[in-house]
Length: 474
Image 1 (spheres, rainbow, N blue to C red):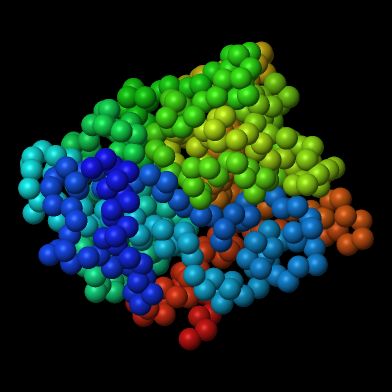
Image 2 (image 1 turned 30 degrees about the vertical axis):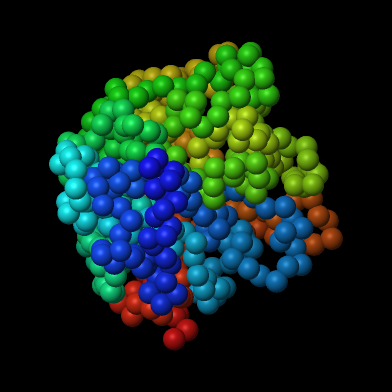
C-alpha cells in the first residue's frame, strides 16, 4: 500500500472516543498493519493540521475586520483580539481542535513506537520507523507545551505546570500532568534517541529528514536559551539544507501567476504541516496581517508585494492599514506552522546575536534578506549592541513567519527577558467612527498567554487542571 492508502486505512484503525479524549485503537488482534513497511508508511501523515483558533489573535501580527468584532456577543476571537483578560475563557473552551489533533497524532506515534518491534520485516526499517515517530512526537509535545503552559524558564520550569505525557500505547491511561521541565526533558530525549537513525533524504517528504530533526533540535534549545547547543544544531541543519527561494528573481519570472511553486516543489519546506489543511491559503483572508506588521515591510520586499493585498473591501477595512495573503495554494505553497529553511537562518542569527557576534548575525539576516528584498534595502548595517541585533532578528522573524503560531511562541519566550518583553497595544476601531475608539493592552506576564485546557479533556482526566489561576466550573 502507498503511504496515502495506509493513512486512509489508519482511520479505520483509530477512532476518537467521546469517552476518553485519546485515540481508541483497534486491538492488536484486529490490526490492519503487520509489517515493518506498514508501520514505516504510517509515519507519513499527509494534511496534519494545527488549528490556532484559541490563540490566533493574542499577538501583534494578526488583525480582525471591524465588523467581526463590533456589536458581536463576546467570543474567544474577540476576547483575545481585545485582550480582555478578565473575561471567562475557561467555560468558553469546551473543546479544542488543536489539543485533540496533537494528541491524535501522538497516539499514532505511540502506536508505531510501541508495536513496530512486534511486526514482521526488516529490523533496520523498524528502527527507522520508531525514530521518525519519536521525532514527530517531540514536535507535537513541543507545540502542546508552548500553547498550554508557561514559556520555559530554567528558574521555575521544574515547578511550572505542563501537559500530560502519553509515552506509550495505552488505551486506558489517564496520566498525571507533568511539569514544563519534564516535558522538555521528554522532548529532548526523543530527539536525541531519533537523530542517529534518521535519513538525510527520506523516501517522501512526509517523513522527517535529518535537516528537519536538527532544525527542531535547534528550536527546542533556543526556546530554553541553550544558545551554544542551538547554534550547533542549526549549523548542522543549514549544512543539510540551506535552500532559499530567491523571491527577487522569482518576481522577474512573473511570480506565482506565471511560475507556480506547489508544495512538493518548494525547496524551503522541511515539514508539511498546516493550520487547517493543504488548501488553507485559498482562504488567506482568514489570517489578516495587522497594520503594525503590514507597515514593517519595505515596498521593495517581495515577501509582501508578491503575496499580500491591502485593497479588498470584502475582507479588509480599507484605511485600517491591514493586509491579507492573496495567493492560491496551487500558485504558491506557503508553509504556515511547520519548519522551513528560512527559520534556520533566523535561529542562527539569534544565536550569534545572543553571543555578541554581531557581524555573523547580520550576515545570516542579509543572506536571507537578499533573496527577499531588491536593492540596497536588503543589506542591514551591523549594530553595536546585543539589544539592537536581537531587535533586528525579532523583526525579521515577524516578516518571515507571519502566520501560524510562530509569533505567539516568540512573544511568550521573549517576554521572560526584560530587554525584549513587549506590552501589546491595540487601538480599535480604526475606520468605524460610530464606536468609541479605545486602546487595549496585553502585559508581557498576562495569563492570557497560557491557553486553558479544554473542558472536555479536564472532565475526562481529573489529573489535568489549568496552568493559570482561572476557575474550573466543576
